[in-house]
Image (cartoon, rainbow, N blue to C red; front, side, top):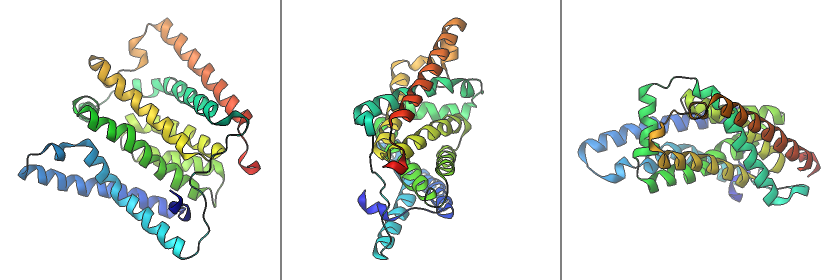
Length: 274
């Protein structure tokens, strides 16, 4: 990861990275579709292969640009430079995880109240229910957290923060994070989680922490979908609980979110003091 310290994308570069991701998804998706017409192979049906194909172009671009900037003698800005202050690492990871879990409950109504089209539902069901479990874990719980956090926080947020305010960098990286999910049922929670991940990355400088949070979020989604396959891919907490139970859960989540953010804000070092 140290080699990537030499590349920090500008605003224009961030659009180029998104274009490469979306273009790669389209081109390689078409190629895989054509290949499936001539070959019958489990490899061609792999969610992991499809995901890697979508990410290969932006990651290759990042690697090439980092190597070029290094040769040009550009200064390095660390992608990963953890600083936890008084909280130390384990307590920071635990508090951040609690904040993330609470936030998923707080934003649940935003997506639960939106009817999901059958086409989108079929895509989700294929990824979470019909894909081989190992394949699903590799794609959604390992590769997606690693590559998306490197792209959105480690590259885009770090690059925008060089010439803009931390707030602007966090907002922009969260927007890009939402955009690359390409549908509102993922984009809305992705934007909210992106704001939290971005703020945590800004305060800690630890990319591994946001990768951990992203992995935890995706792993819980995968686990629940496998353990309760009849629950429905678009089922939310509001659909599972009584009105009283849901109000109690929601109030508890709001309180936990506020408390965990307050503790992180109070005890994590300010970036200008690191």
